[in-house]
Length: 177
Image (cartoon, rainbow, N blue to C red; front, side, top):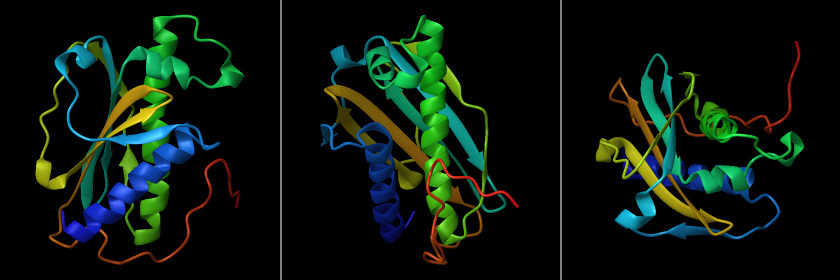
């Protein structure tokens, strides 16, 4: 991934999280470095893949269940079980990748997404391709969430080679035709 692409994608990823998790100016901090071992116990990781004619990749969101409980949509009430929290973890990855897809479509990138998968565990470690992955660790409402976004283009072109060519449809809007 070229540095220009990394800069644009990093900015998009941070903005998508800000829009999704802290829409009213709530506490939102970017964290430096890796978490300590004690911070890596009792985790949920939700992963969702993407693939298109020229791109492939995945988004992984890793946090404690308390993050997913804290961000659980109020219109759904209170999560009734660990399964509700895990389902929301998968939906977080799904919605976040949907927002990213929407923004990347303005650069002419098109891809489909897979069904999210959620796993529970301690000290979860991801094997990633550093050259094509953006890793961002955030603290939202005093809860840490780590995001790993990997995207690779197969045709040897810069990822965002076309530049922004349009505008994205705001999340929550639908166009019927």
